Amino acid sequence: MISPAMPDMLARLYDLPDPAPGLQRIAAAGLRIRRADPWDRDAVIKFVRKNFHDVWAMETERAFAGTPITCFIGLKGNEVAGFAVYESTRRDYFGPTGVREDLRGSGLGAALLLACLDSMREMGYVYAIIAGVGPAKFYEKTVGAFVIPGSEVGIFGSLGDLRGSTA
Image (cartoon, rainbow, N blue to C red; front, side, top):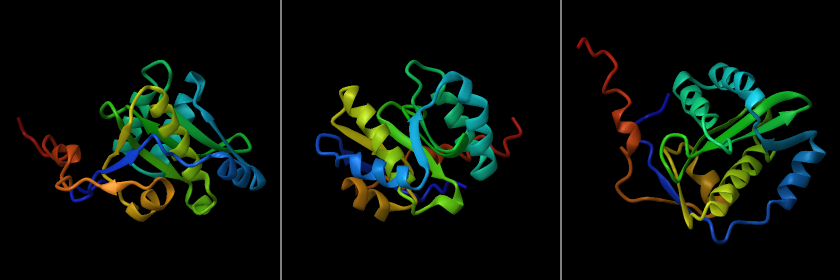
């Protein structure tokens, strides 16, 4: 579950690494990525709900509401193997993202991250906020992201506000 103690990070979009080596790596492993299409919605949300949790599924569903869809999916054959969304919780925010457990370390997560961040750069953003990160070292290594001081609570601090409410 998302913890309110997970900080946000900032990534510079003007010097993203070349995605080509990562795309070649995942292709050699039988994986590929693409922007989600409207007809992918149910399968992607089901994947997120099964492998992660309902909050991420709600955020992912939101990514299908606009045009273009702000979700990229990783595929192994015709099966969803990973996902990444942006601009779903807030403008200029990346996340959530996740890869099927047996495929972690394959490069799929990095390829999905770079696809989303490149799309955000094309939208005109210079920086992207990576929300409520768990694997900070992954983001540091992959795109040079750094923790935003004082962001430990961030927007996810309000997740518990309505839970347990009797009003």
